[in-house]
Image 1 (cartoon, rainbow, N blue to C red):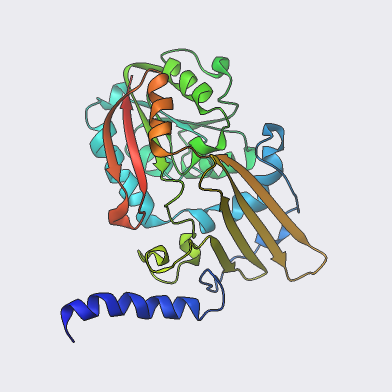
Image 2: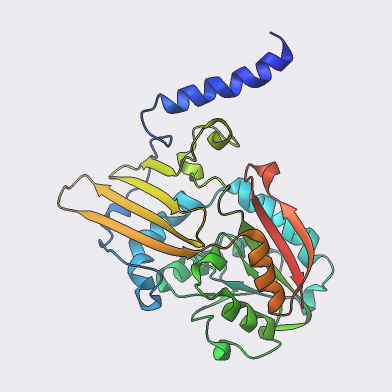
Length: 307
């Protein structure tokens, strides 16, 4: 087969297989998920901070890493963090704040490397998972929109990964606080995306590793369907291209028809340049922008800023 023909034909065949599944997201069986079906049902809006625990409860904390955390992404971020953020700091002077740490996908290797790691999140159940990964770390339930949460100049590094910055309607408030909490010369690491172009299909729902159906679809594919042992998970990313507001909607359908769970995450997602302006307005200087395309995350970036 001619090489140029194969270049185009193979992705088209993969796309056809994807669409023949009958849904706008791939489905696959995920075994070994006992216990996930025992969580409480809830319907909450993360735009209201006091409702955060209603979404991020025991049930959600148990299933979170299966839905959102992949070894490929964590390995890529780990290598990038080491090269662009940690290499120039003596370990004895390094103290990392993981903002909105969730289950702590990076705290285990940081602990093994002897890095002083502090995590903060609004969900106690998510923090329990992080503590299990790093016994020597310190993890606090707290609100990063409050400047008094930490003393000034407490940390050498602060990171907000995996869409964390988009959870805040006023990201500048959080960035101002982080600027205060960092030591002079401290480093901020942000995960940002092009909100109108990134692929919102979850990795657990993707039929092929590092393959984006968005390239071959006329319309943006926004739905993910995943089958667990005792329930079906569905998610949808909803955003008007002309608006900075977005929603990430989740539905859990259980074998028991009387059980139903729905989550709505409201996000504030300005364009990349607008987000960079917000970060700069808090006093930060950008010194590195790492494209995540090599690991399959097009239009997603790790941004490194200094105080």
